[in-house]
Image (cartoon, rainbow, N blue to C red):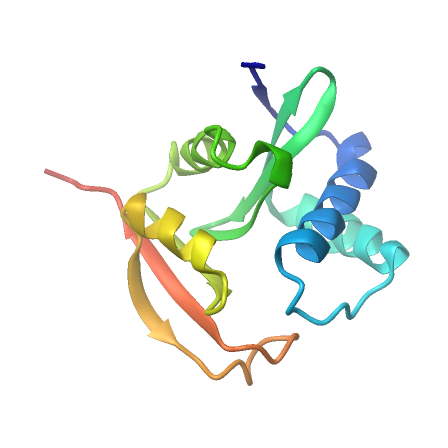
Length: 151
């Protein structure tokens, strides 16, 4: 089994993060509309994600295989290359993001059963379900929250 390593992202990682984001969305979330070009994806990561978020990368054999991005108490991104699903990459990225936080919220698609099972196994609780009118894709989504056990 190939091992992987985590590290904080650098600004120079933006292009590969944007490409992996696009790849995972197209491969694993085909029901979501493709609203942006690759250049718009890169601009989004450059202007909004990297300046405001803590971004962690998972790499194996010098290749990006996953990333997570969080700001304040929100997990905005957790994407793992489909070839690496079920191998602990998502769990490791989530642990890195949760490390110094007492609470973490996220949104995911109602149709994303794999992600929903993953987050529920990791202690996230369902907060709300929406019709999608408040998100860019206009797809029904789910709000989850995790709170660190203080006992």
